[in-house]
Length: 477
Image (cartoon, rainbow, N blue to C red; front, side, top):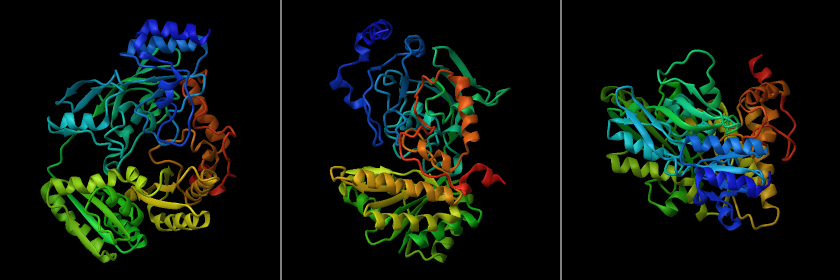
């Protein structure tokens, strides 16, 4: 089937206005938040699950690959489409269908913006816990695909811990339901397998999420440290006391500089690093744990410890953390972010490696990350117009991924594998491991028509030598 014939049939399903095919109009769909680019043959904007199903069936019959697209904020190339593929995007499917205050659930469409859902349910005394840094822009469909995290996932878990059920369209257009409104479903946990499958299993058209009650008390701390090593020591000390904060974030000196360039977040300009710590719960419990947190911060060398006095000050501190990546534009025009995880006790060693790589490659690297669960985000800042700088950044990122694996960590805490890290998969998985994963994918999408070319290595990017200590067999032996 020719492209024109396929698009004519798709227009008959969704309407002429909701198929984008002019090259100039497609420019905004050729990239996401990563460094990769590829122009799709067309972008389709369906209005409901039936239209998604019919479009998928048409593409399947024509042998055309399909990629689901959320808001395009992903950082691993997950929304990049093969040159002859279709994108399905969801700005028209952005309804909060129902909020069940008794069962504390919400039924939403995939185009709903994360923060919009959270703001909407707060009027009922509830909240949606997963809060990526791109919370103001990212969509729930994209969050499901990547199993998105966020600062408050330290205590409450990532997206998979808050998705109860889904309506899903498979590669051939068949509609299935995964999970259960009763929170527990008999049989295989296909819902759990689907969340984080990066759009390779199917496209979610309805999502049932769990809501949490608003906490009685919230207390936010800013621990100010002379250097990043002492801040890392404080992280271990807090968790070592048996405390699990709602959030425990670290921001280094360069990131502080960037944030303060664009907004006064209340971070001291002369700090080597700051920790942003949030406690939630009953008033008496938060009051008791607050004393332990303050003691741990002072005991590990904090230069100062501040507590947000009101909601406005708390919001200001969080605005600084969540706008840090955008603020890096005041330092360099481009950035490349590495999303790796190491055991919390090895944060100091990993950050020393980051500093060593930065100096050796001559690349500025800023650090702002989820310290509580060891999820680092070394952010390389550069000008892509300089010859060779992108290659340098990629080589530096490869070394950092290798170090994460060598320290017993993994390749992604929340951004997914996508295109960016697929060639690093042998660092942590054996060939047998990856073959087992591919067989699961084939159970959902046997013809690999959904988001092909993602997650599994194919030699199209730099492939580092496997690190034996990083293999699952080594970790579990």
